Image (cartoon, rainbow, N blue to C red; front, side):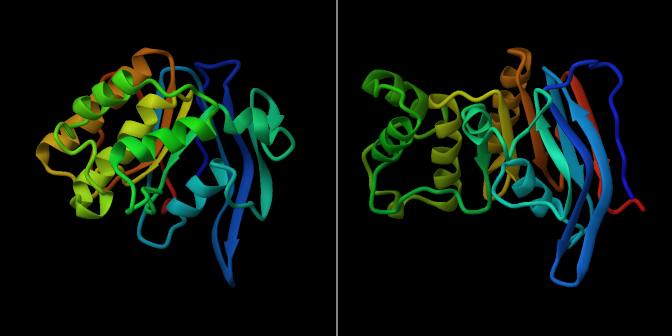
Length: 217
């Protein structure tokens, strides 16, 4: 089963130890080990059904592994959930964008949940940065799939997190949207942050990019 260890970080922030995932009667992966430090991006690869989304959900603390641990700064994330969740942002297939609310209102809720004061000017600037100028006050139901994805990306910017966990972040985006995600990732890493993501395409960012393939046995 796949195993990846990065020796360049003697004190990794995120570490996976002997992780195993069983869904139903299927063993998706076992004996999975890797670590991630500041400024690193990890791309999870593998065939459909190999457990990529399941792994991301385990890393995000949304699902439990069958065996093994996920450690944040050496502590089990299940025992220190509040500390870990304050450092993590998860962007999954379900974007969490409320259709009846505008992009501004969606971000206002996200800020409230993160106990971050609402700064109207800053929110509008972020929405402009993510390509939603002129769409800020429209109901999200009227936005395209790609524009809803941009609202979710804007949430990453207004609610800063050390670790981004992203499941196919390029989905539904046009060429400019793909470029936007790459630029956001590049800046995120340059600031000493980290990202774990799945993608069917190469993630073209400068820096320390590592890969683990769940289809490797």
